[in-house]
Length: 152
Image (cartoon, rainbow, N blue to C red; front, top):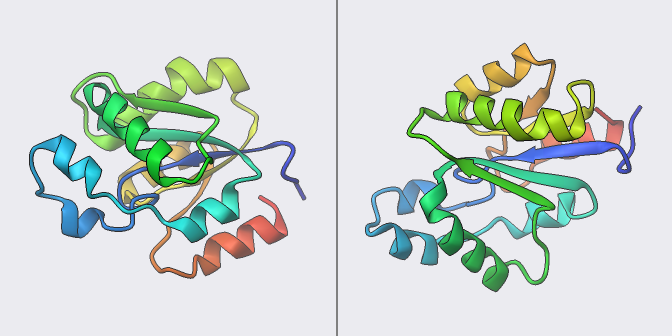
C-alpha cells in the first residue's frame, strides 16, 4: 500500500477537473470558455495533499489564461506542476509526449502514479506504462475515493 508522500497524481483538465466541459465545449473564443469553466471543488479537496501534475491536451497558448482562471477560482490550491500540449496532437499522443519529455525524466518511470483521466484512449496509453487510471463520472468520485483509501 502506498501513501500520500510518494503518490504522484496525473490530473486531466477537461471533463475531469473542469466539471462543465460538456456544456462549455463550443464556447468561443477560448478566453471566454476558460472564464466560464467551473472546477470540481470536491475533487480538489480529495487530492490537495498529494503531489499533483496537471497534464492536459489543452494547447500551450491557452496556458496563461488557464492558470489565471485557476488561481482566481481554486482558493489557493494549484497543481504542483502543469504541462500543456505543445503540438496539435490528439489527447493520448499529446499526453504521452508530455509524459516522456517532462514527467518521466523528472519523476522516473517506476514512480507511484495515479492518473485521474476522462479519455478512454488516454487511459489505454497510461496502461501501457503501468499507470493506473480512474475516471470521475459522478460528483461523488466513489471509485477514486476507494483507490486513494486503499492505496494504488
